[in-house]
Image (cartoon, rainbow, N blue to C red):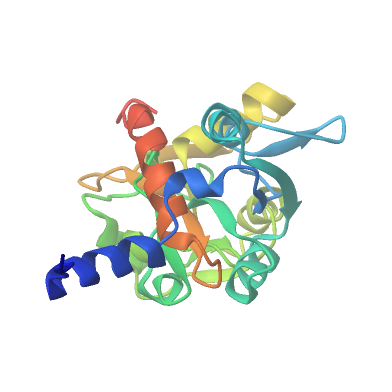
Amino acid sequence: MKLLIYPWLILVLFSTNALAKPSELSDTHLSICGDSIDWEPYTYVQDEEVKGFDLDVLNEILPKHRITFDFTMSSWSRCLKGGRAGDFQVAVSATYSDERAKHFLYTTWYYATTPSYLYRKSEFKNGLKITQGSDLNAYKVCGIHGYNYSDFGLTKVHQNAHSMHELVKELNEGKCDVILAWKEIVAGIKSIWGIDYIGENLAIEVIPKMPKHKFHMMISKKYKYKEQLKDLLDQGLKKYQTESF
């Protein structure tokens, strides 16, 4: 009796065996990184413990697939550098950029934040006449070093500060007309640490006509099972997709 083997069947079998299934990620360990500065309530360190929404999400998704992980909080630039080198398999809370996409696979988004700006009321007593993001180009705009502000669509963002505290200090000292932020992060810093940046001299405004910024996890392209991990994370992250975050 002859055994008939069709070419298309060989191709299917080879492709199936060549790719690891999501279940094959079981009993693996991941090194995950996040930004250690000013990303409350999504990632932060309190009493020497990593806390926040990102950790809650990871603890919800990964253990059920028997995947363990360690979570390193570092500077965002170090997190990205480690991901590009393959030292970290996953970086959390990232916005999209073409440059990052050269080195990482993006998961689906799982929360969204509101793009905003802060200014000194003593300098602009009647506020700023901002009808869309591009109007901010008329001012000296500052942000945090290493952060992705491409969605703001500005020609220049001065990024010398390394934390929200330094950024606010630059604003108060008149080194910037405006600083960029996200409404949820400013509220998170107040809620968790009791630090209220919106006081007698500073005001915050939402940027008109700008969609909320969607955040993703990024998977290092150096990771052997990057495609399978993306599929697994995408399935788990979809439940969190809500514009109310």
